[in-house]
Each structure stands twice: as structure tokens, then as C-alpha cells.
Image 1 (cartoon, rainbow, N blue to C red):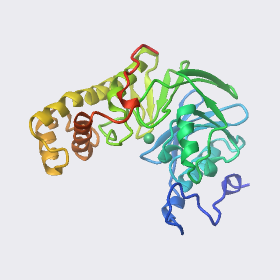
Image 2 (image 1 turned 30 degrees about the horizontal axis):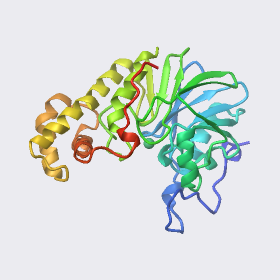
Image 3 (image 1 turned 45 degrees about the horizontal axis):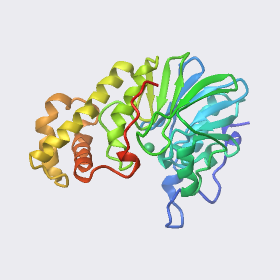
Length: 310
Ligand SMILES: [Zn+2]
């Protein structure tokens, strides 16, 4: 039996997410190479270069976190897992949060798997009804829950508002590993997304420092150390004051040239060597400025964050 015969096959209809154009969307089916490597004990990590996730070897099968963001990438992820564990099917998928680019295509990864998600994420997923994104079969609520699936023990932690809805961390206390998507990753990217809950983000992420781990696996790029996690969080914290100063200095958050000039002058000396600095620094500043100019986003974004240790 070849790898191709063991994984969901591409049919005439490719799942289209929330696209409404009709017709073929070739990029949805494009194949991506997935690299994988063992991380610690039964934890493996997989990436197509930009996105990253983890999967767990169980006694009978595999628990896969997330699905990647297109049907083609989800199939490639399933194929990669089957090259490592050809006799172990994916029996469980754990969703990190609601976003399609990480968890949009369980229907192409393992359509019969059990799917675990936090209730907040699943409410969004159920309402969205995106083609290819399957709702959870098992929903959990609250801040913390423990799982023992097919020999793999881990906790899922919802620390509060960070990014998207129901964004959770998987904590492996024995392996001292934390996996969490779209929060702290190496470099200075990504807080530009609108549903990044900026006023909660830094204090909520600091709660993870009360847990015993030394390897942080983000949903993008590569794993980082605890020291690096603290440094990067320091950058995001610094931007709150920096954005207020930019407003006082008369920077226009819609003036791209002005934003770039301001960040080059003021942030460049400290952070220009950070991964993707020149791509994101000005966008970050604009997003943080909007927070102060508008008052933040929505009801949730204006509640007081929980800062107690986890
Ligand atoms: Zn996301």
C-alpha cells in the first residue's frame, strides 16, 4: 500500500473554506512539502516552512494538532504523519483556535477523527460553517483540562484572550514543552491581525511563566527557548508605550512612509536585527496606534485580563 492509498484523496470538489467565487481555486489543492522531526519523547513537530504544529505518537494512532490552512497542505500533513507512523491512523485532532489558516481543513486531514476544541473556538467554527472546517466532536470549557489520549498525557490551557477565539496552549509537563499558536513566535510578526486582543495579550501570556517548561513551540517558524519567549514578549510590551509616543509625535497610522521612517529611527537601533523586523515593524506600530485611537476592539477586548498564575 502506498502513502497515497492511506490518505484522504483529492476529489473533483476541493473544500473552499469561505470563498464564494465558485469554480476551481487551484491554490487550495496545491501540495506543500511538510518537514517533520521528533521534539521530545512522543511529541513530534511539523512545518511547511511558515506554519508549524505538533503531533503525538500514541500506542494505536496519532493525535494531530491543527490541520494547516488548505486542503492540499492538510493532505500533505496527513501524508507526513503516515510516513513516520504508517500503521497509526490519526484518531484525534486538537484545534488550537478558530482560524482557518491553522485549523480549516480537518475534512482533508482525517475526516473521521475525534476533534477537540475549546468551546469559544467551536462557537466561531460552528457559526462560520466553512467548507472543510469540521466542528468539534468534543468541546471543553473553562481554563484548564487534562487529557490522556492513547498514552499521551497533556493539559490544554485557555489562558484568556490572546488572538482569535478559544486560543489554547497544550502543556506537556513531563516533557517541559508548551505549544501555542499565533501568540509568541520568533521575530516581530503578526500582531497586525484585527482579532489580536492587544490589551490582554502581554499580561495573559506572562501567565505561562508560572509553568515549568523550557521549550515553546509556536504556530509559526521554529521552537524557541523560555529566554527568547521573555525577550519577544518584552518587544510587544514596549510597543504599548511606543505607540502612544508616536501619536503624541503626530505620526499618522495610515501614512505608510511615515510609519516606516518613525520605526526605523526609534525602534531600529534596538530591534532591526529581529526576524522580519523590516516587514512588520511599521505594521505593528499602526495596529498598536489604532488600539489607542479607537479604544480597542469589542466587549471582550475591554474587560480586565486575568493575570493570576496558572
Ligand atoms: Zn490565528
